Image (cartoon, rainbow, N blue to C red; front, side, top):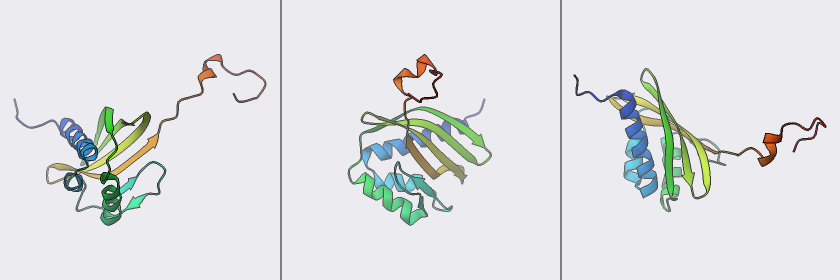
Length: 138
């Protein structure tokens, strides 16, 4: 038996720490989660891609001045060598978003290199009835 933490569990724990920093407005904690050695990117819903540490962390500084009430769920981790991907959902008020969080292992620790979130759109309520055959979209 080993005391070593499962890499997926470690990845999910740092993903949880990311959302804790986000929810609490803790810029120091948020800064520490992001990689300091690699190029980083971030795409917030409705925004252009932020590129590079200065631009990405400046965006987080603005958001964390008044952090939204955010929670996350349905987190699933995928490992690809020293790269880890977590897919999850975010909830901000009544809005549900799909999020992709990409991490790179640096010195035995996962550090975020990319975050992207986008709205989840529910299908129209009448999709269960199927096509009408008229070619119209309902």
